[in-house]
Length: 256
Image (tube, rainbow, N blue to C red; front, side, top):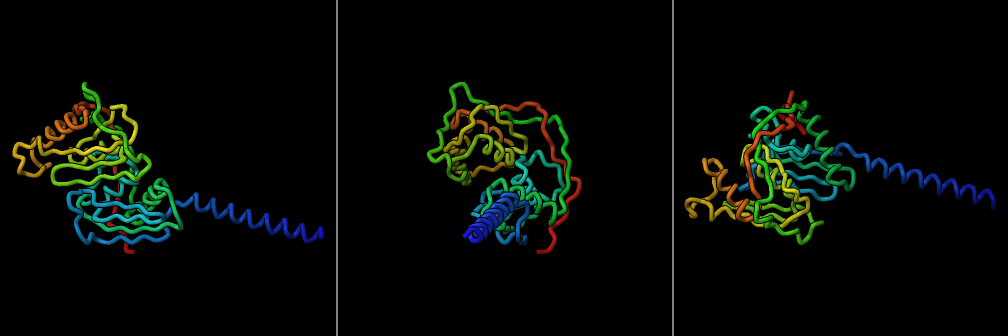
C-alpha cells in the first residue's frame, strides 16, 4: 500500500510539473508558430492603415504597410517613424498564428519578432523637437460619453466624412488622427477612460456635398473644429520633444 501511495504521489507530481511547464511556455510565447505574408489582394476603403483583426491565437491584417505593422507592434504614431518611403506605400495581407490563445500584448511582441525575422527590421530611438498637436479639454468641458461596454474590443469605422468610435481611449484616437494630420498628436486631456462617440465632419466642410479630403489645405481646420464642437476637445499646435523611431535597416519580406 505504501509503494502504491508513493507511485501515485510521484505520478501526480510529474503531471503537475508538466502542466506548469506547459503554462509557462504558453505565457512566454514570443513568436508566431506560422505566418504568411502576401501582397495586398484588395484595398480597405477609407482606411490608410488597412484592417487588423485579432481572434484567439490568430492575427489577420489586410492591406497593411510595414509602418502599419510597426505602429501596431510598438504603439507609435506615423510621425514618430523615420523609414524608407516604400514601408508606407507597399501593402500586404498577413495571417499569423500562435501556439494557442494569446493576449494582445503577446501578439504585439510576436509581431515585433516577425518584423525582425521576415523584414529584417532594426532601429534606434532618438529624441527630437517637433511641432505637435496637443489635445486638451475645451472650456465648455468634454462632450464624449463613457463607453457603454468598456471591456469590449475597441472599434472604429471610417466613412467618407467621419468616424464611428466605440470603447476607445482618447490616446488611441489621437494616435489615429496623427495619420491624416501628418504630425504627432499628444493627449493632455486627462481623459483616461474609454469612450463612445461619432465624429461627423460634414457641417465643417465648405461644401457639404463634398467628401472629406485630407489633402486639402483646410483639412486640419476641419478636424480641429469638429473635435472642439462635437467632442469638447481643443487641438493646439505646439513644439514638444518627440521620441523618434529611426529605422536603420528594413527589407521587403522574405518568402513564406
